[in-house]
Length: 143
Image (cartoon, rainbow, N blue to C red; front, side, top):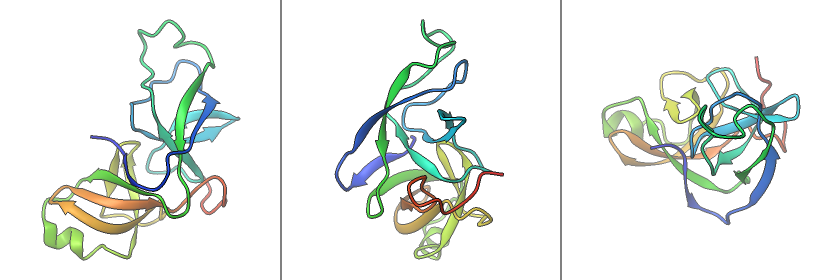
């Protein structure tokens, strides 16, 4: 499971993807040189959630075609898997900022980039988050 909208109004915009770069459906993305790229543990200023997968077998894989992205707003909440295994551990994170392991997985053990604000717990491996480091507020630099 990747990022899925849990609340807030969908805001679909189309942005050019980076050529020859795979993007999972539901991946958190940001822009590099004006084109979408999957987020990772070092990314900041995230743009939103990819609404279409990009794979090496796609006819336009090597092109910078536009794909739909659900742009994350200030109060929007998303569910995402987390690399933790107990509800108690995750409940202790509510109200804190955490990082990403990858474009589709939260990292409850790191908070160097503060990419996500934990606002709730769904299960032992799924949390509710706000995207804290968003492109439109320039909160966190990509390193």
